Image (tube, rainbow over the protein chains, first blue to last red):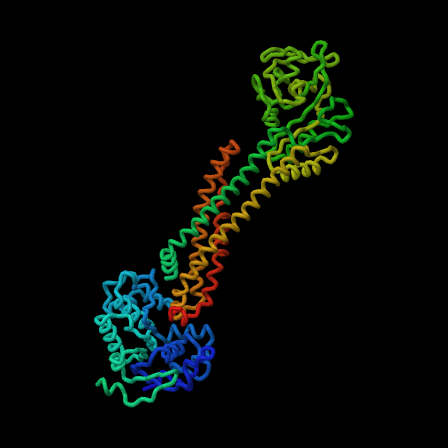
Length: 226
Length: 379
């Protein structure tokens, strides 16, 4: 398996606060990784750096062969469009665009739009009958499924999911997790931040953070799940 | 997808954008109204000033006050020579006629007899009031017109006859009408040029040529200089009181209108600016998300620029229509005259409003500074 993510001695400081301190690890293609840890432990900072939304103070972040730290603003923009699919806890859909248009928006910024493909992506997440609905007309679970369809539409190398079920009820949490499991089965590489050990246990591997450091792994999570 | 997004943006922020479009429509309405009045006022003033009579005089160089001189051989021009050149230079917007003057007698009373192209008198002097009828034939030897004062002194009435005597020669004509000019013309009688030249025994001689150029002071000056070039042996001079008064009045009105337009443009831009500043704050989250999805700032800002441009153009068009209607109403109410809609105002208003909307949209520039990581954290 090829290495999709390679992080070497990553450090990020916000003023005097050190959010990440010498973090190093690798993720192989097709892996589902759960990033866990308490609030303020550096999980979201790591996701932001991996997604090209933030830059590290030092260290290297290589995603699919691209050294993200060396990219300029325009390079980061292309990197986000081509390599990364984001799923956020708050869904972050554009309120005045329909479900279909929210998916097409990612296509538009990537290259050209294909309405049929966007429709198929929504059908895949079970929203074929909600294409023209605005986010306010969708439940939380449905909104998150639109976000998943949007994250997938450009066939990204890495899916970054920051607490994807944090705002969902139990039923919708199951739907979204089933979707992620399905994507994993298809060979997608997923990096998921979560607080919940039960959700983290679904991943192949678990990386624990504490105060910006990696916590030594005792046993592979995947073995517990299986 | 681009225009689909632009229209969704417009729909998504319609509450705020309604304020902006109201400002743009109001601004455009007042500006197009003022512009229409400006164009209309120029036309109306030009027409009004033309009623004051001739604005260019051609006279022999030897005469000091040719318009009032009577026929003497030293103060005359050859009719064919001067009129040939005038006809060559004059455009359709110019009314003109030669004039010859003689002090004739009616019985024992002296009166200034004027020979001219009778059919052109009304074109040259539209403000004259006529009791009776104008004479439509240029060389009608049988009819003449009498000024109000001359008619009173000589006991002339419309339909009556007038016999003029100059030295040993006489000329008789029927009074077609009594004119009231409110000026020295009221003391004169007007007959055909041929009749006067025969009476004075000076065939083909004229004292002055009067021209009434319908146009701006600039056009009058241009016509005068062209005539000067064509007739170097004569004096060609615009009647400065008329042209300068017209020019000065037009200049003042135009300055007032331009000042108001600038003020309104600034106020409209400020209103749009305030709305767009609020909108920029509202859209920070959307822009942060768009950036996170890989949207370049150029692509994102082009959406907003198109949105604002559409807003400006729509405001300009709607306001333009309203403004033209407003100026028509104002023309009738304030100036007691209909101001004809000037269609060139629409593109001017649309361009101005689009530029104002763009200027007012400057706060959207701050969206370029949005950090997606911060926005997505909900800060």
